Image 1 (cartoon, rainbow, N blue to C red):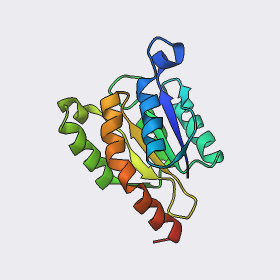
Image 2 (image 1 turned 30 degrees about the vertical axis):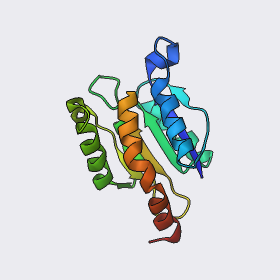
Image 3 (image 1 turned 30 degrees about the horizontal axis):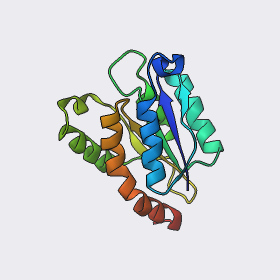
Image 4 (image 1 turned 60 degrees about the vertical axis):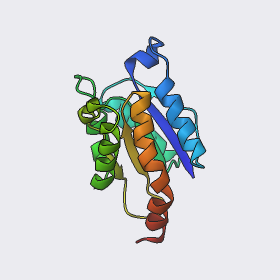
Length: 159
């Protein structure tokens, strides 16, 4: 199954900050058995993220992980850019990610990431918004990756 990572960060884009969290996300997805492309780096803001999500779907990616843009800053608009692409939020999964994160840091409560499906039909995709920290990526994908087979088995057979 094809997966991609979209890193949402002005500082990573300009080279001011290394892409450690994006590279970790790609490695964790690969370790989960997915066919992962190199992370795509886009600027913060609604339009760039939305365009990257559209491009990822057009490329046939079934798992799309965004890294960054989930905080409280004025350009942290990844959840707002993601929401129009999600037809079904997986609130229980978002809560599991929050609980996992809170076990490691109280700052996990400041992340606003969405997790949801682009539809309910075979071929639809899962979009996961992860924070920009390596710990946040580890917590998020530590919850999501083990559930991917179950999610896509149900989605692809139309349950």
